[in-house]
Image 1 (cartoon, one colour):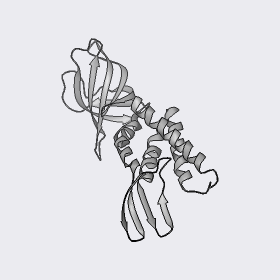
Image 2: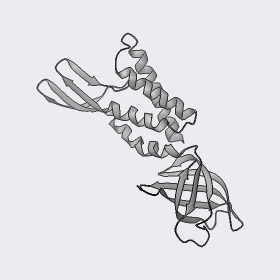
Image 3: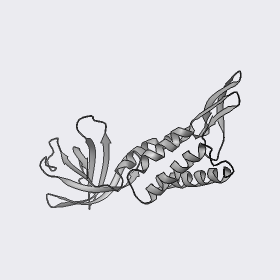
Image 4: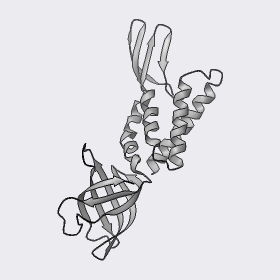
Length: 197
C-alpha cells in the first residue's frame, strides 16, 4: 500500500501545483488532467474501487508532447521535461512522465482493493474443495500480488493470510491463490474461480 499511497500523494501534489501555476488561465486543458488526478487521489484515500481508471488516465494523458507551429499539446503536470524529435516546425516527443507507466500494473491490481473477493477451487486439491466458497478482502499489493487477511477455515486449520493473483481470462475469472495458515506451515496453493461482490 505504501507504493500506491506514495503515488497518489504525488498525483495530488503535482495536480494542485499545476492548478496553482495556471490560475490565470483556468481554460487550459491541463487543468482537466489535474482535476482527474485530484479525483483519483480522493477516491483512493476514501477506498473507492473506481479510482484506478482515473489514475491510469492521469498517467497516459501526460505522455505525449507535440508542437506544431505556434500550437503546443502538453498536458504534463508540474514537471515539464521532454524527450522530443524535431522535424522542421514540428516537435514530437514524450514527457518524462512516461516513467509513471511503471505504476500501471499496481493500478490495475488496485481494482480489487477493499472489495470482497469470493473464490472456489476448480482444480483438484486435497484440501480446497470445489463446492466450498471462501471470501477475503484484499488490503494491499505486495510485488505483483494482492494480499489480505482472512478467517478461512479448511479442515480445522485457520488460514489468516491470502495472496491472490488474478489472470487474464475472457470467459471465467481465474486466479492463482496462496492461503497461509496461522502457524505459517502447510500453505495451500490453488487455481480458483473468483467473483467480486
